[in-house]
Length: 242
Image 1 (tube, rainbow, N blue to C red):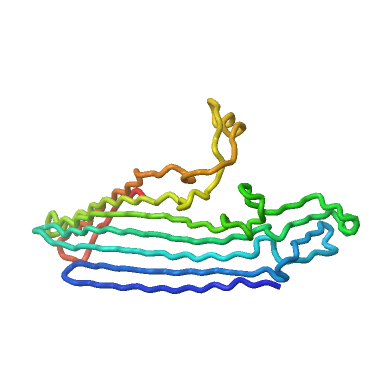
Image 2 (spheres, one colour):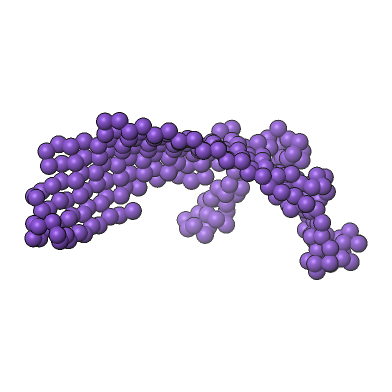
């Protein structure tokens, strides 16, 4: 028998003063679960006659802290209604993931189990020390990611019955990194094609999982037109790239 317990805390502060909307948010999530019995491996029989031990991914312990800052300025100048905004998000996760630390054994049948003849055995160890990952000082991971965005918008009242809305938003979604260099993944090998590079790939430490992308721009434009000028009828249209 095993269970997963999750704690969640959410704190938000809003301040609206003289056309300045500033917001701060903090979210904390914690999830943990223990294997029961703690030292019994996960045994699986493909003929479904027998099986015991807690799930292979236990024990686990994750703590995730997310900080969010957002500020929006609103200004009016003649026929223009301007908005400017910034947003910053930082995600800090500390994880202790003990998957397959108790051992995982899979058998075709009950007869193979009695004969102690598994066809699959798994155990997570620290390759630098040869220790079980639970007793290794390298088991903890500290992942970080930072996101950033800004936007500008102009509501331009060209005439009494015609308003044009134009805006531009830029978003950067940060690259997930591990602060102590304990991150690994597939490293493509030499070759002129992706197939060749994948065939010659190796598994090793990575500074980052993927390259950052800075060109995530989202322009938008729209208009509102009252052809009669009476305020009783309106034609609206718009276009945006997201």
